[in-house]
Amino acid sequence: MSKVYCEKIDLKNLDLKKVYTFEEFEYINDQLKTRTIQLNGKPVNLFEYENGKLIPMPQTPYAREKVVAEIVRQLANWNIETHQNGGVTSSQGGFDFNVGGQRTIRAPDVSFTPKQTDRGLNALQNWTFQGQPFTPIFVVEVDFIESEAQFQVFDDRFRNEIFAQGTSVELGFLVSIGQDNNGQLVGTIHSWRWYENSNAVRHYEHGWRNMDTRVSGQQILPGFILDVEMIEKAISKQYSGSSSSDDDTRSACPKCAETFTDNHIFMKHFRKEHALKRRT
Image (cartoon, rainbow, N blue to C red):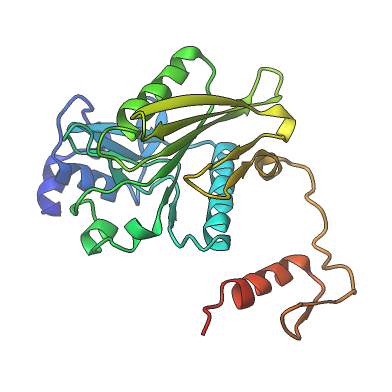
């Protein structure tokens, strides 16, 4: 099958106006795992899929991807610390949102799928897009919104695709972060939430507030708070502080006889050997 597609699909001259089959979409994305193409002067190695059309996903600037990584870290830590045992994915984790009966593959920058869904997936759902469609309950997009028109694109996407009837999404964040003309960091967080009792999606805006913004996951992600200060630190060029590895003082683990001079090594030990260790 791949040989047939290889003969008729020219990756260097993709026609974005053409309608592609789902198998062709999968083949193209599979090929782009090991190569990059240029579209309108931007490097692309991933497409989303909507009504037979390829939607290019340009590569993300370094600093913005560090923001994505920090949000993934916070969400993954919450997933572990609160024993949610769900699935956390980042930018290339695709989902079939199946909007209006049409197969629509989207890859949110960050997502969370609860344990009940995650553990019920079969091999086709886990490893291909051929199984029964499923979606996460929480998604995050990271971009830099500089105009009302740009925001409207995301507002429409959240309301009409991500929260479309039949999806499982209940909460979505848009983290807008970038630099102004003076090189100063500019940030805003938008959130959308679906309310079951009124069958409505509502939008909220959260200011950056000098690193004090903490956007709650509310009842959907109990105990999860998006910590903006940690996002700031992730993209800051300032020194993050000592790990205490240059200090000869040894601290004892409160759960066992191990001792440590490095705080981060202690944290890794405690998480692996005590916090996450399966109870017998």
